[in-house]
Amino acid sequence: MSRYHGEQVLVVPRAAYEAVGAFHGVRRNPQDYLAAFLRPGVARYMDRDMAEEDPQFKQIITYAIFRHQGRILAYARTPKGGESRLHHKMSLGIGGHINPIDGLTDSLETYLAGMEREIREEIRFSGTATQKIYAIINDDTNDVGSVHLGVVHLFELDHEDVTSNEKKLAELAFHELDELAGPLYERLETWSAICVEALKADRG
Image (tube, rainbow, N blue to C red; front, side, top):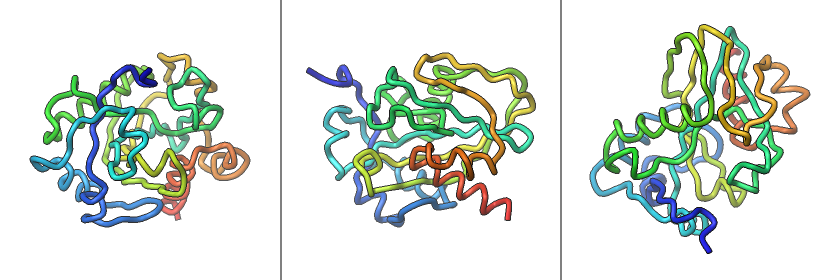
């Protein structure tokens, strides 16, 4: 029986990722990776059950970080989330997979539509937000990271009124960067720890 109920997710061949530049951690040239992935014939939809077991493909994951007056939104993943390997970890990332409902595989509009859909599904916020594509994150040292590649978006909110739409997101709250880099650091999932280090480096 399918763990993911036949879900189709956007993937790129590992070779396409490596052609732009394989790495561990964070790269601050996300546009180069997206441009390479969204060319015709590169990205495609794949059964998620297969993709989770095949490191020759990278599932593209939108990973949106929300910040208000320097404080960063974080939450704890509950067992209601789909990825059991991340349960009880803290995360900064709101987002997920790109699915066929979002559009064609070789379109930036499809990618952005998937990001916006995932955000709407997981949280709601008041006020306005500005955002930029911030980074690419990769970690091939564990089973989760070896089959995923994260595209990090950084949102700046003008209001801290953010609430969860899903039970898998618990303890939703804004935290100072020093708190995430200090007392909470050991609780962070790998990608969030990588992002905290990048944000610390930006601050100098």
